[in-house]
Every structure is written in C-alpha cells, then in structure tokens.
Length: 465
Ligand code: AMP
Image (tube, rainbow, N blue to C red):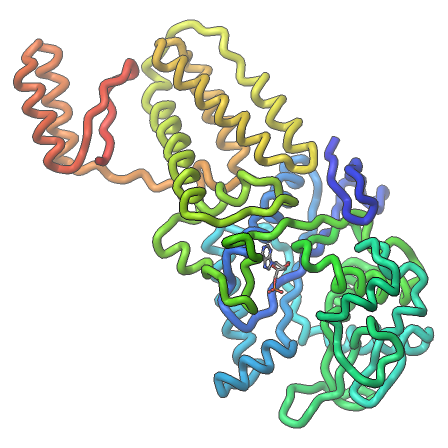
C-alpha cells in the first residue's frame, strides 16, 4: 500500500487513483522551468525527486502519465531577452533545449509529455473567458484579473485566509486598479514590443498561473491525481491553480494529492536564479557524475530541505565508492565462493520496500542498503557468501536502480591496462610458487602504473590509486 504526504490535507494518505474505473492509472503534473537561464542544482533536486517517485510508482504497477509544462513566456524571459538583445521566443527555445539536455544528463527520463505555455494560448484564452463569464474575473486597464474574494476557499492549500493572502503580495502582480491586493493576473495586455497573442479583449499574453490549469485541463480534464513542485510554489502559484480550475469546473478538488519538495539551499539560502547563488547542473557535471547528484538528492527525503556543502558532497562520494566496491566484489566473487550461509535477502527487501511505500522514504531505504552492504562485506570476509546470495543481492540492486538510477546506471568500469593485468597474473603465479620476493617486485611495478593490489578472500583485486 503506497502512502503519500498530502499538502492539502496535511496528512499521510493511502494513494488511490482518482478514477478507480481506470485501474492503476495516475495522472501527475509537475511545474516545469521558466526557461531564461541554465537550470541549477535546486531544479535538479526537485526533478530528480519526482523522477524517482514516478519510476517507483511504475515499478509498483501504476500506469503514470507525467506531464510537465515549460514556461516559455513570462516577465523574466522578456527582461532577459531585452538585456541580451534577442527575441524572447528565441531565448526561451534556446534554454528549453539546454534544460532538456540537463535532464538527459541526470537520467531524468520519466516525463511522458512536455507542454509549452505558448502552444496552449487557445486553451488559456478559453479559461480566462469562462472565468469572466462566471464572474470570477474582471477587466481593468492593464489586463484581466482573478477576484480572490469570489472564491470561497481561497487559501485552502497554503492554509491562509484571504486576508493573509492579501498581505503576502510580494509575488502577486502589481496593478493600481485591482479590486483586492491579492488578485492575480490572468491575461496581461501587452506593451509595445512585447510578445502578444490576439484575443477578444485585446492582444496580450498569459499571466503566471493560468498556463498550468489550461494545460492540465487539456490533457487530464478538470480533476486529476497528483500535482508536484517545490514548496515555494504552494502560495500563490498552486493556490491560484485551485482557484482557477475549481471556479471554472465547479468540481473539487482539482487535485487529490499535492506533493511538495523541500528546497536545496546553499549557506542556508534557497538556491535560485534571482538570488544568483546557484551552481548550474552542467557546471556540477563537469567535475562530477550524475550518479553523485542523484545519490546526494535521494539521501534526503523529498520533502526535507537539503543544504549543499562540499563536505556533504565528499561524504556522498565515499558512499558511492562503497556501493561500487561492493558491486565489484559481488561480480568477482559470485562464482568463487560456495560456502553455506543463512543469509536471506528477503528481510532487507521487505524493510526497503516498506520504507519506500511510506511516502518514498529514501533516506531510510538507503540506510537499509548500507546495512546490506555492511552485512555482505562481512560475509565475504568470512568466506560465507554463497553464489546464490551474491546473485540475489545483485538482482535486488539492479531492480531498485530502476528508480534510483545511480547504482548501475552510468557506472563506467575503468579499463585496467593490459600491462597491469599481465603483472598481476605473474604475481599470482609467484605467490602460488612461494616466490614472495618476486611477487613483491611485481606489486611494486604495478604501483608504478598507478594501481594497487588488494588481497581478499575472494581473490586479488586491482584498484586505481
Ligand atoms: P523555476 O524555473 O524557478 O520556475 O523552477 C522550476 C521548478 O524548480 C519549480 O518546481 C521550483 O519550485 C523548483 N525549484 C527552484 N529552485 C529550487 C530549489 N532551490 N530547491 C528545490 N526546488 C527548486
């Protein structure tokens, strides 16, 4: 039974598809990027977490449709394009391409469909039109706005009253003619030189929140299963989505389960483009593998904040090495060791999956993997791991890597030079013949090539220094 924490109810609930008649079908929407710059590790944090969640749900037999929007029209895009002297459309397309490249680099492969805001203007206009007709929206000089006082439950996701919502207007569109301070823009009339689309109210462009409900209504209808994003989006963005779609359809809830990721921080501050304190995904990947980043992210619960420090990255590096070493050992030892042991993988599997079923508790699940690594290492050193035991462990690790994506995925086995392999064979031969001096000389020669020989019960192992 899969449980998820739901921001809307503030409870952990059993995940049940909205539409039972559809079997195990789940519709999931996650807010995508605003494409005006390179993506950073904060984005990676959120998108790796949802990649794991979707892939895990798929291994449990759910048929997940994962939809993500691309915000390719917005003030930030227009301003950055102006600074660079390019057209906003060109800038957005360029950074959309870079975003998709970064996602591929992180092996984020679970998204079923990406939907650009500008490809859904017709759907956006239709939503604004219905909101106007139903009396939830009004027109003023610079655009069409949503009247939050008309929506009875405004604030139900972020647990704010409409008044409190009005107080936190820092990220809500500013305009002198608004009825309530917290009202947000649905359609902005364009200024000269800005991108615009024709509408019956005058040419303009969509506001910040309406693109998401227009896109989800098109692909999922008025109600669906899961909505995700980082926690900064709870208010006003996700609150606004609820107000828009529930007002249009008269159906509630818009979404059954709201899942929010914690921030990736650096020196305690949210990593963000606007604060300028970010490390881009591609800069990180210049010196590190995507495996390191996936483990770094998944060591933490998706809802918890993560602080980025060099120390933590180094700690994760050595954990990854421990995993790699174990796989190396299992791959050489599985045909050598035949001893009897009462080792049972089932206990680890059971604990692992119950952690994952409990709101995707990856830190707990990973601590079980590290327990398994300790246990396996100790069995190997006592010559007690059976061939079957090694096979079972490898199979288990392969299976869970389908959603973790850092155990086998992208693991490059370094090719050991021929000369080192030859010297190692010679050394083995000398050892068997008790020619210890010669064996030591061979070991020294191997060292000069930058490799170490480690003698384990399972045989000799060559390691790069
Ligand atoms: P943006 O491109 O800023 O609209 O962000 C795209 C997605 O990444 C949204 O779900 C954001 O909430 C999320 N995000 C941005 N910065 C961070 C961060 N520092 N930590 C976690 N998620 C983030």
